[in-house]
Structures are given as structure tokens and as C-alpha cells.
Length: 115
Figure (cartoon, rainbow, N blue to C red):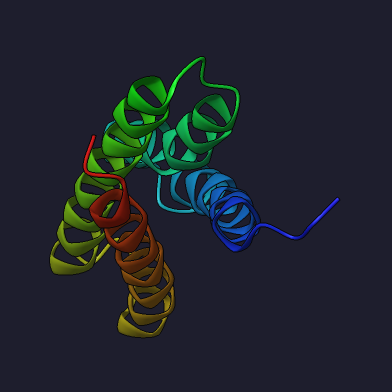
């Protein structure tokens, strides 16, 4: 099977988000924001996987659009976690950079579809 960059990057990012959730919950005793970022950060890859199984080009694009929106939401939660001192700047920059990269790839994919 051919390597799919967006599938791999979103999956690896989801793993990092799960680890962030565990850190926030166990170390920082943060229970609301951690759930929010867990949902949006893992939803990115889940929707990409759904898109790959889409029944049509329109269905594929719709799921990619959802992934794009979930990525934007995740960027929001990362900024909020940084600005409320739940994560340090090093952790923020690393996760934010990965998330922005996923957003750029999704943007390129969506722009080529134009259904």
C-alpha cells in the first residue's frame, strides 16, 4: 500500500494529542480543556480515514472539510492551553507546528477537489 502523508501525519498527531490529554488530566488536573482538545485533535485523522472510505468525491470532500475544521479548532485549544499556562512554550510550538502542517496539507487537498 502506498504511503499516505496526511493519514500518517494525522495519526501521529492524534497519538501526541492523547498523550497531551493524559498529561493535562494527570499532571495538571485539567479536565475540561483536555477533553476538548482530545476530541478535536483525534477527530482530524478519524475524518480523514472516513474520507478515504467515502462513497463519492463529494463525500470525500465533505469529510476533508470536517478534518480542516477540526484542525482549526485544535489550533484554538492549543493557543488557549498555552495562554493559560497549562502547556509550556516548547510543547506548544511543537504541537502547533505539527497541527499547522496538517492544516496546510488539508487546504491543498481541498483546493484541488473543488466539487
